[in-house]
Image (cartoon, rainbow, N blue to C red; front, side, top):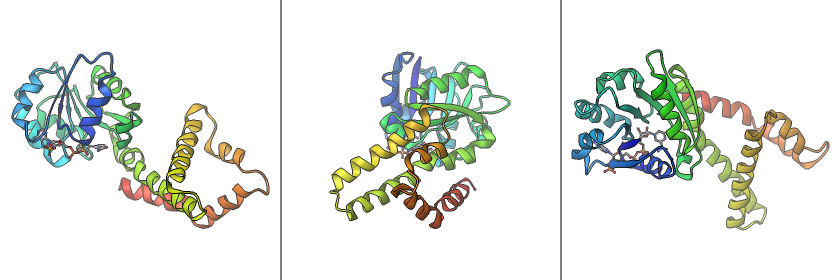
Length: 243
Ligand SMILES: NC(=O)c1ccc[n+]([C@@H]2O[C@H](COP(=O)([O-])OP(=O)(O)OC[C@H]3O[C@@H](n4cnc5c(N)ncnc54)[C@H](OP(=O)(O)O)[C@@H]3O)[C@@H](O)[C@H]2O)c1
């Protein structure tokens, strides 16, 4: 499969990097704003076209390459907030147009990508998108109506987790641990906790209870978190990002 990436920026670059290890990808060509005169040429030389430009650039890019797109192409857009209907209209293509929402951990091969489908989506195009993005991390397929929620949870989510990581590092430093050690301890703790959640079917509440010895130190901290309204604040933040 030949892949063309229009917009070799932060995400396009991470995708290009991740796809290098994807067995089904035979070639990757990409463009940036400076080399955008080659966009149509790259489309013609590709089976799958990934549009990774900023949302406000998507319309101009698709209108400019629509003549080069054929029914054989799978067109995948990563742009936040640009619906499949608009992608179809601007590209003048129908079923083989796919909208995806990856996140910044794609840069570390640990992306969470949601592939959006609607009533007109072709199964083969959805499957191609799912396979390609699986080389960057985990991938699931959801209905397009859920993309506002997806944007909040996995798109904005890393920013929330970075705040938690930063706050835990600050606290570790306040407790006398040097920054470099604190950074490693906190990041690995977050990674390890997430790995446990993904490993089996245990509910996070069960995993939390397993850490909290009755009458011990963990539970004292957990009560502080409840009194600080961490849950309600996170819930409000996520619903606000989805709005
Ligand atoms: N970053 C993420 O983790 C992430 C996560 C989810 C979704 N997204 C979505 O992915 C898209 C890209 O985000 P990003 O963070 O990667 O942005 P970015 O770093 O600014 O990259 C955008 C790239 O598009 C290029 N470009 C602009 N106009 C072009 C044109 N006409 N033809 C070819 N290339 C063109 C830019 O070229 P220059 O470098 O020359 O300006 C740049 O390399 C956005 O729509 C965003 O909503 C990003």
